[in-house]
View 1 (tube, rainbow, N blue to C red):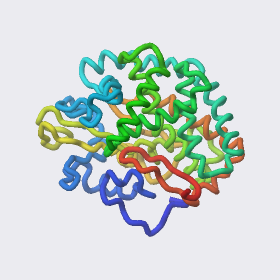
View 2 (tube, one colour):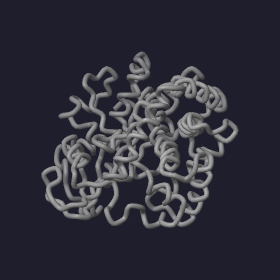
View 3 (cartoon, rainbow, N blue to C red):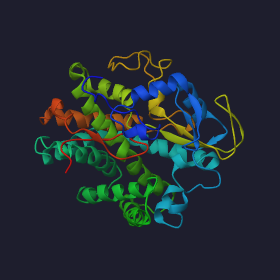
Length: 368
């Protein structure tokens, strides 16, 4: 991989791989040797191949949350837990079936109306704040702010409240992160109240899912923006290709969402392995993207790849309805950065990744 680190240690496990400088050789090793296996150190199953990932994500035995813990215990009794318990992506069965059409329709309404215009407007505004995109250390600010500004605007949040909304989303997402402290949850609870008030129209399930639009797009879209900039730096030939096509290949090649989880609710066969009620499964979406059975020559960054299969946004009933929205924001955001003077060749110095167990979001410039 041109421009990638050399002589680096392999990731210690599939969770640590998400923020490794180059996890993809390790993923391809998993694909070749252990496409679906039990990791006794991590205490969970790991699915990495396209077949295994598809089997887990479409299995009637698997759920998005442990059956006995629909809301993580640290969040119980807080406004964060109240929202979490109503998110369509964190529910199965009748709750999911009842909410999913309304959530999908809401996302579709974004795409049908002003998403392009709002993205161009706010990308220009945020790029100008970067000083012609010359301050590399602040590129991540652009990537995190843009999806929140766009989606919050589409939800009717006034322009003057957008900076505070970004801060609230950051605190809310921090409370959801594995390993969040009590203080993180308390800060997130205050942010949850702020976000519910900002999106308006009560505290019902749809209000919770409007907050979910903001929180779920936050790191994932920031990662898609940042990883597209990295790809343009590492593959100069991609700069002559349509930027939308580059973004689509980035979603496969350097996925902003590296993994997700499922929980076995009924003992039995999952992906050809006998699993027990209560077993947890790490679903490595980024590895499935590099399965040669799904994408021939997966180690090659091919903008014009035919019949590309992308697992980044999920498979089955819980597939993310926001793929087009995220891709549009990323494409138009990166286009604005380039038009504002960003030189992709400059971004690799000091490149590192935001600490996360699920997402892959690059940070640029000197560590401050």
